[in-house]
Length: 75
Image (cartoon, helix red, strand yellow):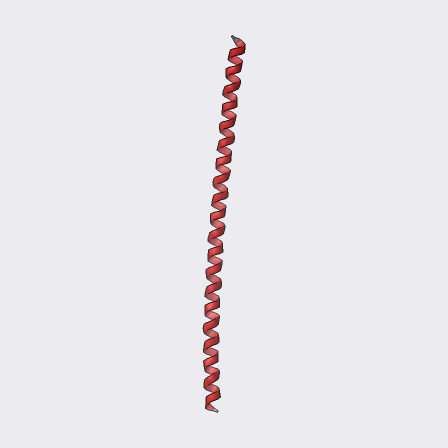
């Protein structure tokens, strides 16, 4: 009778340990997914900032070229 009770208790404890391990894995997976999402968002922002800067530089270069052309035409 006592062995049966011990076996039941051991099985119960094992089930609880498995449950805890499963919950920890799920928590870690969720954290990793959130990190990945944050990383992708940062990459997107950096990419947008780069594109914006490139556009600004091209516009500035175009303006400088036009001013240069005007200066050459005057002479």
